[in-house]
Length: 214
Ligand SMILES: C[S@@+](CC[C@H](N)C(=O)[O-])C[C@H]1O[C@@H](n2cnc3c(N)ncnc32)[C@H](O)[C@@H]1O
Image (cartoon, rainbow, N blue to C red; front, side, top):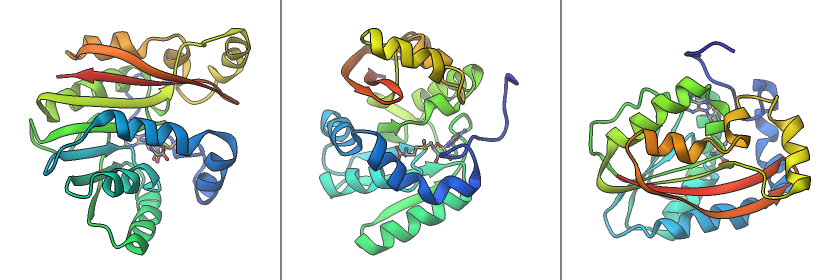
C-alpha cells in the first residue's frame, strides 16, 4: 500500500455501496451503544467546539449535537458524496451543524480551534503514515486541554476476536488497529493520558474506544 495515499477509502470501500452504509452499520455493529458511549465520555461543555472527524453520513455528528445542543458542532469528511447524505439527514433534524470537505491528514482548520475531536471507524481507513499525520493534525487543531475520542478496531480482547482479526487485518488499512498500535501512535503525536475506555466484541473484531488529551 502506498505510504502517503492522497485519496481516501469510501465508507464501504466502493462508492456504489455508500448508500447502504447506515443500514449495514445498524445491522452488523452495536452502533447506538458505542456511539452513545463515545459521545458521553467526551463531556462537552456549553459553547465548546466539537469536530466529528470522518463524519460519513452524519450519524455521530447528529448525536453529538442532540446530546450537547449548545456546542458548535462540525463534521468533516473527504467524500463529497457522503457529505450530501449527511446534509440531507441533518436538514431533516433542523440541527445547526457545519459540514466541511477535507482530509483527516490536512485539516482545513486553524491551530487550537476545537475543544473536542471525536472520530468513529475512520482510522482503519488511513494508511499508517496518514494515521500518524492525522493524529498530528488533530493535536494541532485541538486547544490545550482539548480531548480526542476515537472509536475504531483495536487489539483483540479474546481468542475469537483474535481469529477474526487474522482475516480483518487484510482489509482496508486496519492492520495497525488490530496490532493495538493506535494508543502508542496517539501518544507519539503528543497526546497524554491516552487510555482505552471501552471494548466491544463485534463481527469484525474488537472495537475499542480511546481517549487522549492535549
Ligand atoms: C466507515 S466510515 C465511518 C463514518 C462515520 N464516522 C460513522 O461512524 O458512521 C469512514 C469514513 O471515513 C471517511 N474517510 C476515509 N478516509 C478519510 C480521510 N483521509 N479524510 C477524511 N475522511 C476520510 C470516509 O469517507 C467515510 O465516510
